[in-house]
Length: 425
Image (cartoon, rainbow, N blue to C red; front, side, top):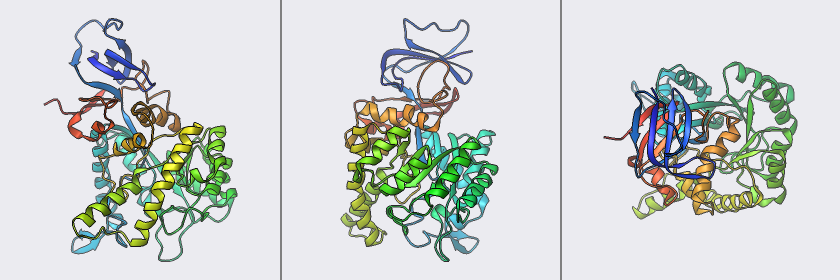
């Protein structure tokens, strides 16, 4: 029995819109797509869903998520504690079993919001590896999940690793390659290399946490073992080093707009970019809201000041990337302060605010993200032979991209041909 969607307008992920479209799903696969008069529906009893007046589109993807983050973890030193049998601990410090359930619930929120694929770029003790495995084994219904494991130096005593990960205490290219083997052996889908510090963190954009030789050795070993590599790289030189070392993707890239060579190098080497633009804007919005209420935002003054500077930096870099043709996907940094799980689509609004078309933003979150993941043959567009990861939206996101943020508008979500979120009632 086939499942048939009919009468909707289709945004297929390639830049095309098909009016009065029909999409045929058999098993987990899309088998036919096109205008109603052109598509032959399989004979026999089928499940037909009329989505008249709605929009059918590919499942959205978020390539920079942190399922463990509770949005408040870094606002105060040590995060905001909760009770563990009379002891106050942060989420990252709680028992693995508790944190695993917390992460699975956050994954479900992303799926319900139409995000059928997420890449988690770092979690305490690399726990996302097993969360992703549990989802693949059918222990819970969540998005397709790709787990990044971090390769990093170890911070000085008393300083926490980024996202409470264990990065391998890298000193030299041999140790970098060895860390990759350990992470891949543990089940990592991607390697996340901390090439520079975070633009607003203890280590800054110009602080190189991994040397070029370490980055290159880790990347080569990951590729040899069939894994892709993304680099946390914020300053121009860090980005250049990451590109020359052979990484597949760059996260954040806050200072891309400060050096004309960076965008060209990324295009020439086919390196993707996941900028995470909203994460600084979210802090400004939270601070503005708190001020309007006569309250404190919870962010240290120096941190908020740096975040405000980053907003303009990122905007200039984004404009330069669009102008230069950089393969720009979408990741949100959800789980960071004020970044709420299930609100991932806010990132698309910022892309449109900064000059990208609504169609371009949707393609970035679907087809382009699939290209960056190396999964364009399986997901990212609504075409015969692709996995049936689909979202049906009540309103037209090409008229207002913000409708993707409204849960009531996410009418149906399909993953692998199965309905995983249903708001028809």
